[in-house]
Image 1 (cartoon, rainbow, N blue to C red):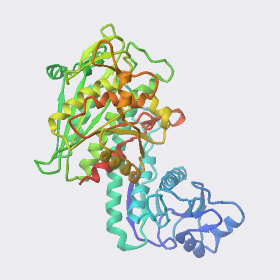
Image 2 (image 1 turned 60 degrees about the horizontal axis):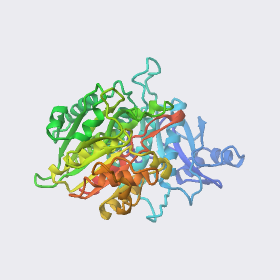
Image 3 (image 1 turned 180 degrees about the horizontal axis):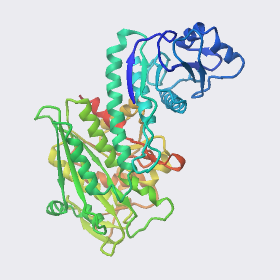
Image 4 (image 1 turned 90 degrees about the vertical axis):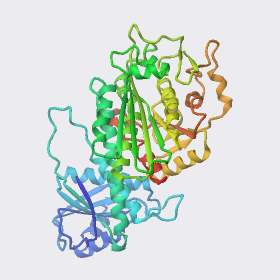
Length: 499
């Protein structure tokens, strides 16, 4: 599906469908009013009869409207004019796409960037911002995962969507915004596809091959793959303790994007890549265990972000470090009570083999030191406690640097991929005490998200670091089961803000 921007008139533009917004209380948007006037008040008559109420996301199709060049008009509810938020604006565009597809419409022009959006952090939202978020929402809603189905692979009917830009002076910024939206949505698609693939296909080796293949499209990108032999030489005993029960060999993927000057310090992203997590010897319950293929969504998000960065050609240096393992309960698997030595030299008593994400991340975080990073951000589906605390609406951010944390919060607000800061106080460190090693890998039931971050903080003292727990936002369960592509928008926006 191709999305473009153009300046048109709703009553005279030739297309299969025009889309205009209606607010509640019979308030027509400017373009809806123009279309209504051209087609002899057909829209307002419909509203007066009570056949369309303007509720957020509701849609209604009008066929063969007189006085309009377009073949159809799609009305979309925009809710209260005073309460239209960025989040509801994005949801509205998801509903628009669904309605257009259901009606088998081949092309459409959307007159939605004229709507006023008011957010708490700003008085008004620019046309460029509205263009970007409309584009992202449409492309995100257009994603489907059908490559492993033998049926249901029909060619998409909807080929082109045009976002109308009222004022031509806004066109250059709108075009750039659409480019940003396309790059981010493409990165999200990569992350979603990797997340949705089953564990028997998306193994550590498969992820490594995908990273290499992806790098071929960008001359500024270099990929290095470390195997278990190389990791043993680096003394990554913590990471390798997780993979030792699996027949799938662990991989450490390193992606280097050099868009800045050679002397510029890189921004480092670290993504948890547990391609399937049984829990190991601390075996998980069987119910919904299939969703543990999503335990590599941190890795998928980082790989997707690197694709977005490459597409945007950002003028900064970025390094992605992706530790990839499979956690299985083999006879050779790590046992509760085992003690391992991390790359940093610190020893870890593994009290629960299902707290494995932090065991692979800690060695990757130590490895990050070699790049002399400007900042380091790790992202991981790390704790169920995060889902309990924050649900599925936002990720959790914990950091040893308040400015970095604030930068991520700002990026989350701008991108719509929100995150929330949680405390990283030394008070919680005592929960990680071990009688037999430098630390335990779990801290008990209380504050599980925080103690997991406290564990990682012990390996990040040499640089500015933030941890993003995406356990609640990385995938959806139920009827809409599937990877979401988050936190690609958040990470990409953060990196865009650094250029």
